[in-house]
Structures are given as C-alpha cells and as structure tokens.
Image (cartoon, rainbow over all chains, first blue to last red):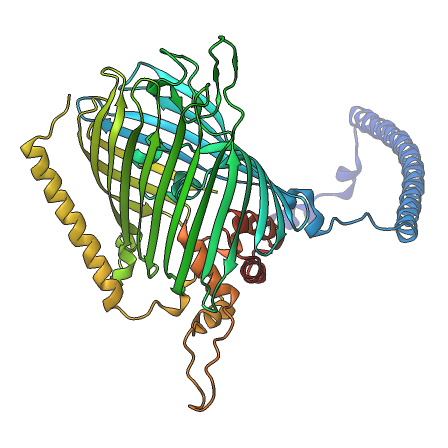
Length: 447
Length: 131
C-alpha cells in the first residue's frame, strides 16, 4: 500500500529518464544476448545435421539387418526343405547295438585283516571283471580277469600285484540241453569254483580245501547243460570235459614225479632234458553230475558228484585224481546251507601214492526272515563255516603231515543287493605254521 | 608250530555254540513263520506280485474226479528258483531287455539252466526290465 502511494505521488518524467551509461550497458547486454542466440542457432543447425546423418546411418543398418534376416530365413527354409527331402539318420536297433551284445559284469573287493600275532593291515584290493560278448542267440564268449594287490604277510614282505586270466571260453548253445564250451574253463569240481567268486561267497576267503586241493581252471573243451526231469523245475545238470590237467612245477627238486612238484595250475613245466614244455600228451578227463530239486521258489536242494583224473608228471607214470561231493540247500529266502567233501589222490616217485582230503560246511541266515521290521537288522545275515584240510604236503619234512581245522563266524551286511560288507573271525587249529587266527573284513561289490 | 590250546578251544566252542544257536534258530523260524510274502521276488510290480502269488505247484483240483494237472512254472517262479542259488537276486530293472539277453545266455551256460526255463526267465526279466 505504501509503495502504491509513493508511485502515484512521483511525477512520470522521473521514471523515464535513463543515463547514457545505463543505456550503453543495456545495449551491450542486448548485443551479447544476440550473439549467444546466433551461436545457439548455429549449434542447433549442426545438431540437426548430425541427427540427419545418424538417421541415415540407422536406416542403412536397418536395411542391412533386414537383408541378414532374409538370408537366415532363406537358409532355415532350405534346411527344412533339405531335411524333408533326405532320409532321417538310421537309428540303431536296440537288439543289434554292439554295446548291448558286449557287456562287463564282475566284482570288486577290498579287504582288511588282522592276523594273530601281527598288526592289522589292509590285505587286498581286487578287481575282477567278466567280459561277455554275445554273437547271436547261441554264441557267447566270456572271459574273466582278476587284478589283485595283495599284502604278502605273513609269508613274505611287501605287496604283490597280479593280473590273471581266470577263464576265457567260447560257448555254443547247441540246443536246450547241450552247450559246447572250449577255452580256459572253470573246472566243475564241486560248485564253489564256478559259484564262489568274490561277492558271491558270503565269507571273504575260500574254503581251505578248495584252494589247496583243486585246480581252479584248465585249458580244454567241455560239454554241459541241464535236462528238466519234472514239472516242478527239477533238472539234471551235467558237465563232461577234457583239459590239459595238472603238471609238474617248474622247479624240479629231484624228478618231475616228486610229490613236491605237483602243480595244479597246468601241465607246463621243466622236462627231464631241462626244456620247459608241455609235460605230457594225455589230457585229464572230468565230469560232474548234479540233481537240482526245487520244492517251490526259494526252497530247493542240489546234490552233485564230480571228479577228474589224469597224468601229471613228465614221464606219465603217475595219476592225479579228485572226487568231490557237493550239496546246497535253501529253505526260504533267508536260509542257505552248502558244503563240499573233497578227496584227492596222486602218485609220486618219492612218497608213493597219497590221499588228501578236506571239507567245508557253510550256513547263513538273513535276519530279515525274523520279520522284526528293523532296518539294520533286516539287512544283516549271520554266517558260519567249518572247514578242514588234512594231509597236506609239508615241504620241510617232505611228508603229508599238515592238518588244519578252521571255524568261522561272521556277518554280511547288505547295503544293497550287490554292495556287501562282510566281517568274520576265523579260529584256526593247525600244525601248519602259515595258518593263524584271523579277523577279516571285506567290502565287496557285484556289478 | 601251532597246537590246540584249551583256552582257544573254549572260545571256539563258545562261538560255535552261538553260531549254531543263531543258525538253528533261523532255521526253526523258517519253518515257523508263514509262507514268504508275495513280493519275495524283488520286483514290486503288480504283474510280478501276481506271478509270485501264482506259485501253485500243488493246485487244488476243481473236481475230485478230474486228474490233477500241474501248471507250467512261470518265469518269475523260475527266476526265484535259480538266481538265488548262487547270488542275491538282481532286480529286473537293473538292466535293459537287450542286456538281459546277453546275461541270461551267460547264466544259462554257467548254471546249467535248461533252455526252455532260461527263455521263461529271460521273458520275465525283459518284461520288467529298466527299458
């Protein structure tokens, strides 16, 4: 209000008067503003030109992109047309795939053992693959290898790595009842040799008599098969074979026919003329006849008799013979008992004819049969074995005076149906210094 | 040279007795308990259970006057009879149909299984195989 009053009171001439200095200053300011406007106009022109160039460049790029997309579309179209006109790649038929005709089965084991009087140690690592090749419906080639890293204690120091061909045979199934096999054969002296490998056996080590008295394999030919004899699954099973048979060892002590020189591993040895060669030209013959009687699934009895005989020494003067009785019983899915009696006899230059014998009986019971519904218990099997070995050759005294009896108790824990953890304690009574009580654990896998 | 020791014999006898009791107890339980469950065969499929249920080696005669005919054993039954003789049973689903063909040829030879029985077992394994 006061301002309005003062403004109305002052004369108008007073407000219109501007000094020269102020006018010149104002003029200078206006001129600068004009220059700035011109600069802005020029800058705007440049920007417009740049924008125009960018727009032109974008247009060119869009055109090139369109051309590229067109090329890609054309290529895709050509590809589709080509795939429609050409046949599809041939898909392999499942039955004919080589990978399915060729298979690897087998087992692997890992052992820890504590021998009486010694420190506990990891005893063995074993990998035993079996290779199968099926050449059609009737032909099968099968070979088993055994690669082992073995602690040598207590017999010697260090470890031994071995790689062995356990068996290698060609099978031709002639008909439902007869198969011809040839090659390195697992010998059917009893059933343990063919059915006791690795994870199949419920106890980590083999029965004494099987290891000491019988050859595991032999090179030769075999006829084998099964013949049904009843409506409930009963069958006769048989094997008849000829193999090179045992021989004399490569280190003759006196003559090739000395008792100590018996070599169950084969008939190659040192002849009397010092040449390493086949020792004799007469193969050994053997056979097994078994009778399998199933009462119902998981309930069965099998009895078998087997034997082998043939020359073993260089001169062909002495025979090595073996007879085995085997039996196996299953009473339900949980109970199994089996065993063998083994009798061998062979002649020698120095000790005459001598017999050796051994036997083993083994039983197992799966606690799942108790229906306790306990997870750990249900996976456990209690096992026991009694085995004996009599009249074994004693190299120190050059006679057959070693006798051993062994009692084994233990368990099998089934992580799965093929992954087993076994633990056993073996009580040994023996006059053989190499035999001792043993605690042994084994982790085994079948595959 | 090792010799028999009284203490050793005592321990052996003790363990042998325990083992014998456990095994004989198990054996007794085998007879005391009822028949194995229908799914004793590892495969849990309905067809297998049915096949296992069909274990009837002594079928009931429909009529007293008619002769008793034993049915042919199924592949599942033969599988349960033969495979468990030597090793824990393998599940059919563990292998493909083609793989079972190779394995069964191997087992036919190794276990002396008559050919017609081997074919029934193979059929059972392939019908329930993994692929």
